[in-house]
Image (cartoon, rainbow, N blue to C red):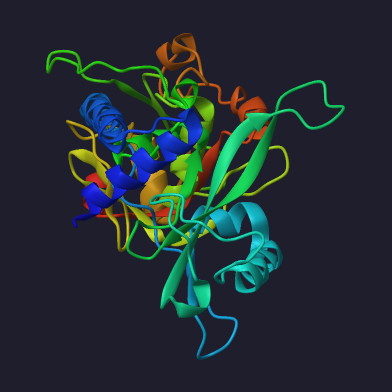
Amino acid sequence: MGDKNRALKAAARKHMEETGETSLQAAMQHARREYERGQRDGDEDLQERMGFDEAAAGNEYRPSPLGTAYFIGWGVQELLGMDQVRQFVQHAEKNGTPGAADPITCHLCDKPITVTREKEVHLGLVLREGRRPGGLTPTELQFPVWTHGQCGHPRVWSWSQLTLERRRRGLPVATADLPPKQHRRGRTSPIEDYYVFTVPENSPPVFYLQPGEAHRHGPLGFRADRLSDGLPELDLTRDEPRALDEWSITADRGGLLYIERKGNGRWHQPPTPWAPPPEWMAAAHYHQSAIFLTAPAGSISSATFDAGPHGNLSDLLAVGRNDLLFGAVMAVTGITGEETAR
């Protein structure tokens, strides 16, 4: 039996348990309709021009040399730290056995994970907006996402992203947890991206990139994708951007061509090269690097962008405090002294 049929049969059985349906054939038809609807949604769910198809590689963690390898998504380490990761792994080692009171279940196939019998187990994280007891405002709740090695790469998800992926695989989901429907766009109306360049004194120049349209899965979806891409969150009121050797911005005499992460390929490439002002190119050539920043659509107003290449980035202070600003110092390659003099 193929993976799709196994998933449909598991979804049908779960539907029977939840609804009291007694006909396996009727339950299978229901599961098949849900799967096909998920496939149609998948066609409509456009791949953003920013980001990778797969999550950036994380760390491998082995409690013992001969034990199961745990692959930890890059963003998971960023949000939790290795101490919390070790606690999750200890929980898995204790409960990932047949008959355990609190079994470990794969979020992408709904089958149990016997961790001590698996060569590798993946640990991701899902972000969900909720309220803690006594809290007055929504807060971000974080829950571990366990998956078999063959079910997918470990990453950070928003709740609606994980829900949509489960439905694509024919698994039962709550319809209310799915993102709003998104219809296919014509080729004449691409999603626009906005950018601004600044040249701070005595530091690498700044390149800020902002998508022109809101993320389908909202701010949590944007946050989950950037963490999965391998970009750290940044609060400009207290943090200095980190230098990440695996990231780079490639340029030639026409401007900046693309941003890439070693091992994952090109992260973002505009239809035509970005064209920074000459002083930005000169500063990038001098420092051989730039400070790259990105935040969700609308973080900086269009009026600020219209002010020119030296726009005021003070709006990003509030964005960073809300954990929605991401960035790092990246090497800029391909710029020569001849080009910066032009």
